[in-house]
Image (tube, rainbow, N blue to C red):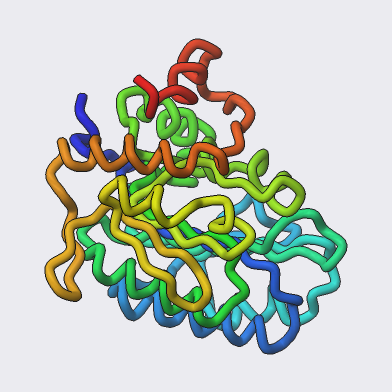
Length: 290
């Protein structure tokens, strides 16, 4: 199976995703900013949230009653926990969600960056995701942002769907998941080691990261880049004016190889996910070297 050729089921499927790691002090202003970002995501993705998971009842998924904003503020306005997490989505047992937002906030003493993760409908244009990434980076103290393809799972079929989503990555070099690249093993290292889990279609780096990447390296690799909001933005897309398009697969492979060479000093290995055998995990760790 070649990358991006995949038959969706009610349990797993491909989505475009974007993820942001930031270190703002969590106060009323940041909560309002996060709310505005989620509102913009819903507008751009043309989706609605119907389900929630959060607080002490996080393992269970519930219907949203009274709108997602009510749920959001109930979770984050008090901020009396060391870590707070809320998932908003629109899955059903009969179909996979086409959008999801996961918001993770932590207290000031934590060694973990705050995180917002979005799943976009697969047909979302890369131009939209690029613009959204730049906009979010203008609002928050983003240290690292990334966007690309993820193999996502339906929580109504968990844990079976989670295992299926990871095993589906065996032949998908350029697809990630919450159980591999975006798992807690990376987040726990984020502040102390200042690294990233993998290259992706779109990335943005604060100075703490991009100071370790030289401009000449980027220029010689043929990767699209720019400095904006005091951040370095890299992508492997084809650009025609202000429009970003997905390149042919051979170009993706070539540019990913080049991008991996540029970013390799920043990449932090992650722990083996429970759903992959040791040999499969070793192969995945070397997937951009093969």
